[in-house]
Image (cartoon, rainbow, N blue to C red):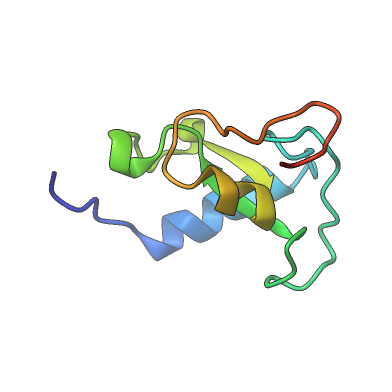
Length: 90
């Protein structure tokens, strides 16, 4: 599958739109602290709900807020094996 060309201006715009209302992590359901430094495991990142590697699009409707840690554990899967609404990660 050919690499998806990504646009940094679009990425930044999508990131701002998603963060605007400070939604909870769509993977674990817990709140995200939007003031944390970007490398903190519980900081805000944008997750491609359907991963690009699985044919997902780099569009706003395929992106949601997530914790860096949750997104890292989800990797390029369609469903994160670590999802628990209690917020605990295995």
